[in-house]
Length: 87
Image (cartoon, rainbow, N blue to C red):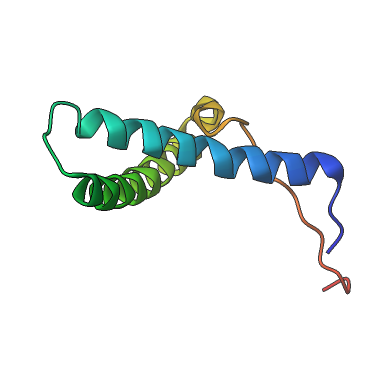
């Protein structure tokens, strides 16, 4: 597979943006909750995972219908990859 620098950066941005959104949403979801440190860490991890996956799935589905939603992943198009052996 031949990757260009642009494709690698697109993939990186489209991975990092949902992760940041998921983390921010997880902190917002637990705002005002009184949790001990260990529970807060676990809840943050759980919420971040759920919110990240949900956000990514929702935006990907919406961008299939309306391409501009791709910007909510940080870049509107998917990276392109070519088969390594010309498959």
